[in-house]
Length: 423
Image 1 (cartoon, rainbow, N blue to C red):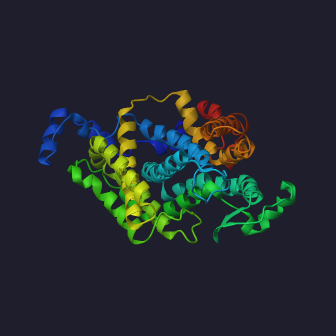
Image 2: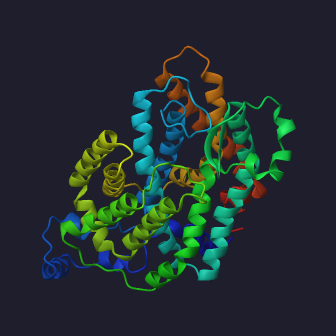
Image 3: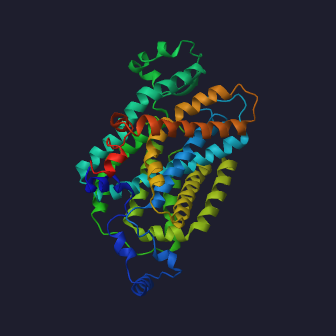
């Protein structure tokens, strides 16, 4: 593979064109320009992105979010939220609070980063290439994962007397047949299939296609370098809050698309906000400067979620928590200066396969550990760490070296060693 192809493969972490000029400004002229816009210093506000052609902070956030999603699924077994494939008979209050927090914060941030990456991708690709890349990176692992891992997940779900689908959630008579009496016959019955956690890939693909005209238009513009006043960075939180509160969003959290249009619109808004961040580096600069206040917003708003629950106020507070966490994560990651390295690249590429793979081992570990007389926190820790380790090992030995397996997980077919050799 040529060097140009490798650059395109890494383009999701590139700084959008035009941002480099923002970084390269002479410090004196930068201060003068900022003064015109009423921007005060310290200098951090005037440096929204790093000078590296790759955003290591974005890649770092993806890796951290993948770990957070695995933890979320381990916690969900022990949380009070009933809509899940496998549940402990004794819910844990601590697990419930932490699981809800991770779900409120991690998933919207994933969509924001996806929007940012879409902008970077379209600055390096034609729209046709972008669509083909979305199909191979999202639809292929969605279909493969749903057919293989989704079947096993649905079997575990039905075997434990639970049934989640387009109809919602209901308790059912436990399935007592063996797995191979269930699979592959279930593939012909939609009520015996699930996309489980891979709903994220389906939603992201649809959102990417629906918002493609917007992303294309902004990708062809010069990034805005003006830094807005501090109150402006809280406007997205108000829009997100209005959407969830007015249209009764977020709860019940059942991403089946069929009955989930408010949450679909909410995640599309998060994606659009990520696009906006890439188009307006000055906004991201102000967001970074607001990190301490965004931390406070996150904590106070989530305390309100816990107190208000599934009310209009609670739904609005969900959005405020999410935006506070998004800003906090971007601000904190932006302060961590990492250089690209082989280990970092390895983990970055492993993120998507590990995301696709992890849920089944997490549930199998849950099935094995639930009957044991161990503290809930210990079971959660074992499920989290072991599921992550198993998934990473599967990526390393079963997926990474083999082109067909790489393709099935949404990766470039050529292994990294061949790409480095220019093959």
